Image (cartoon, rainbow over all chains, first blue to last red; front, side, top):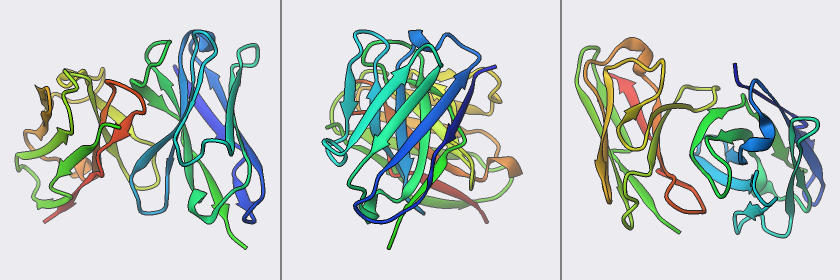
Length: 121
Length: 107
């Protein structure tokens, strides 16, 4: 059974940093693209960033480019999201999502339970 | 970026009703569309992929149709557990984009 477990969320002041983790199990992690998708309170879904299984490419939404860094450790089956210069507008539940393929793939078939990031003074 | 527009934003329906939600893409996306169901406090769950293929384990009262720019999700006979918010997502090209959601509420 595919499982994705996010951690690392919490309360942080504007301008602060946070590192999210997503521990994956139940599939061959290195073969699949992985993404972060967020949802602000009471709002819809917004794609944030992706890590490609092929070629190591990383991709970002314009809203986080230059502030967030996605990475993966295939030996630990874990996806990360390093978030810096956090803004109040980054407040959201952050979900880790598995794609069904590798290589610029955004067909998400499984999501973690999410971790809440609150940016507030 | 490809814009996805869902309608309606919300609807009220009764158990047993047939419900249809539509999703329109700002350009052709072939059949590259997913539908998700999300309940309060829970992660999205994929219902439909490739515009019309039913995710394993999802009841057959859910169906999807469409291609190009116009798509729909239909629930043939609404059950109490179907009251939730539904999102479409284009998987045609990056960045992946979602519709704004359709909240299905109890009448």
